[in-house]
Amino acid sequence: QVQLVESGGGLVQAGGSQRLSCAASGRTFSTYAMGWFRQAPGKERDVVAAISQAGSTYYGDSVKGRFVISRDNAENTVYLQMNSLKPEDTAVYYCAANPVYIRVLRGEGSGTNWGQGTQVTVSP
Image 1 (cartoon, rainbow, N blue to C red):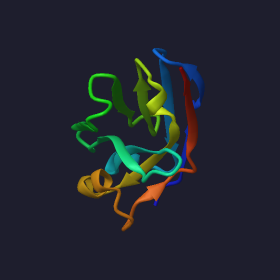
Image 2 (cartoon, rainbow, N blue to C red; image 1 turned 60 degrees about the horizontal axis):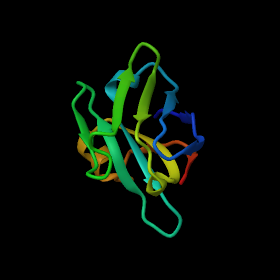
Image 3 (spheres, one colour; image 1 turned 180 degrees about the horizontal axis):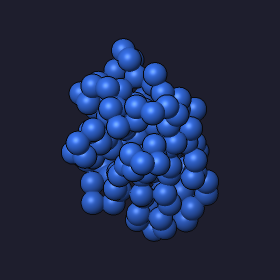
C-alpha cells in the first residue's frame, strides 16, 4: 500500500491556473497507476484524470484540453496542472493509487488507496 498526501488546493479566480500535487510514500510508486478524482457538494466523486505506470493518460470530458496529469517517479509524486479554471471545477480533489490501471479509471475500492483530499474553489 501507499499513503497519499495532496497539496496545492485553494482559492483561484475563473480563468486562472493551479497545480495540485500528490506525494506518495514507499518505494514502489512506479508500480502504481495514479488518478485524480473530484467531488462537489451533493455530487458523486468522478474521475478527472488518470495516468498509467507507462505514462498513458485519460481525461474526463469536462477537463480535456484544460488539465494535464503527469508523474515524477523519482519524486514519488503525481501532479494535476489545471488551466482555464471554471467555477464548476470547484470541488474537493482526491488522489488515488492502484496497481491496476482500470481500477483507478473506475475508482474501484478494491486495492485503491486514497488521499485525504484538497479543496479547490474557483470564484467567478
